[in-house]
Amino acid sequence: MTEKTRRRLPRAVREEQIVDAALEVFSQRGYHAAAVDEICERAGISKPMVYLYLGSKEAVFVACVRRESERLVATLREAAHTGDTPEARLWAGLEAFFRFVTDHRDGWVVLHRHAADLGETVAGEIDRARRAIMAEVTRLVRDGIALVGEPGTPATRLGEEDAEFVGHALVGAADSLTDWMERHPRRSAEDTALRMMNMVWIGMRQVLGGEVWTPPGRR
Amino acid sequence: MTEKTRRRLPRAVREEQIVDAALEVFSQRGYHAAAVDEICERAGISKPMVYLYLGSKEAVFVACVRRESERLVATLREAAHTGDTPEARLWAGLEAFFRFVTDHRDGWVVLHRHAADLGETVAGEIDRARRAIMAEVTRLVRDGIALVGEPGTPATRLGEEDAEFVGHALVGAADSLTDWMERHPRRSAEDTALRMMNMVWIGMRQVLGGEVWTPPGRR
Image 1 (cartoon, rainbow over the protein chains, first blue to last red):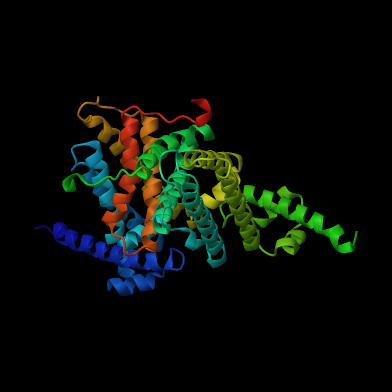
Image 2: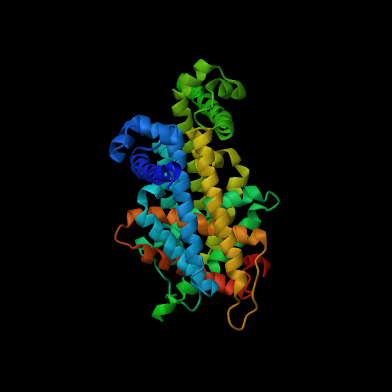
C-alpha cells in the first residue's frame, strides 16, 4: 500500500463525516445562520481540518447539495429499473422518492427549502403567501368537487386530508410547470393548462368514479 | 372632500407605483442584490417618499409578496367559480393560473424563486442539483414509457418536450407533497406514493392509450 492510498480512505471518510454533520446544521439553521463551529463540533473534527478538507462554508454546502442530489438521482434511477412496465416503474420511482425524503430528511430540507435564508420577515411573508395559496386551492378542490356531482354519479366530498393532498399535488405540479413554460416560450398559458388537464383530470375523473389503483403485488 | 380623503387616493396610487417598480427590480436582481435607489428611480419617486410610504426595503418586499399573492388567490377563486362542473372548474383554474404567471411575470418570479438570494456559488449548486434531478426524471419518463408497451397497445415514445412536461409535473407534485407529508406525519412514504399513483397513473394510462381531453367549448 502506498502512502497515497493509505491516506485516501480516511480522507473520504472524514469528508463524509463533515457532510453528515453539516447537513444537520444547514437543515436546522438554514445556510446563512449555520455556523462552521457547530458543524465541526458535531463532526468531532477541528475547524482547520474542515477548511483543509473542503475549503469554506460555501464549499461544505456545495458538497452537501452535491452528495444528496447524487444520492437522490441514483435512488430514482435504480428504482425505475426494477419495474418491467411503465406502471411498475412509476410506482417504484414514487415509492423510492418518498422513502428517500423520509430517510434523508436533512438532505431533503437542504435541497427543498431556501426561503428561510432571506431573513425572518421576508421568509415569513413568502411562507404566508404559499400557505394562503395552498389553503385557497385546497378549499377550491374540496368545494369544487362537492358542489356538483357529475350526472349519474353522487356528489363526492373529499375529506380535508384528501383535499389537501390534491391541493399540494396540483400546486406543486403547476409551480414546477412554470419552469417548463420558461424553457418552451412558444407554448401559451392555454397550451400548458391543456397538457396539465390531460395529465390530471382524466385520472381524477376515474378516481372520483371509484377506481382505485393498488400495487401489482397486492391485487 | 376632507383633507384626509383628498390625500388617501394618491397615497394608494403611489404605493402601487412603488410596488410595480419594486417587483421588476426584485424579479431581476433577487432580494439581497435589489437596491432601493433603483426602485425609486423606476417608480419616479424619491427615496424619502418610498421610506415614508412603506418603511424599509424589507417592507417594500413584503408589500410586493402580499399584493401578488392576493392577486393570485383572487384570480384562482374567481376562475374556479366560473365553471359548473368539477371538470370545468379545474380547467378554468389551471388556465387562469398559467395566464397569471404569463401576465404577471415579475410577481411570479418573486413568489417562485428564492435560491438566487443565497449567493452565486450556493444558488448555482442548488440550480445544478434541480436540473440534474429533472433531467434524470425526464429521461426515466421517456425511456420508461418507450421500453415496453402494455400488452395489446403499441410502445409509445414520448417526444422530448412531452417527457419534459411529465417530468416537471411529477417532480413538482412530489416536491410539494413532501410538505403534505410533513403535515401528516402518520402517513408513510408508501401511503404518499400510493395516493400520488392514484392521482397520476390512472390518467396517464388513459392518455397513453390515446385518450385526449379537450375543453368543453371545443368538443
